[in-house]
Length: 93
Figure: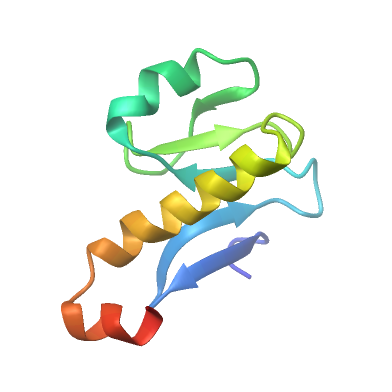
């Protein structure tokens, strides 16, 4: 838990954060190349207080279908993992 939200992290680096006590809105890391297309969709906007054009806030779990949600969480995790050292990455492969 961080800031009253459930956070999923690798080595203290967040890749998914959800407001489970509120409206199930969540923030997730995204590819900056996809940022404009994602934020053009209903229910998706720039995540507040997160790296600009690298994080999106999604209004609720229904904005993405199950397979897209799973894929986006996996991609967010992979982006965070890729920025860590090779030694640390090896622990998570």
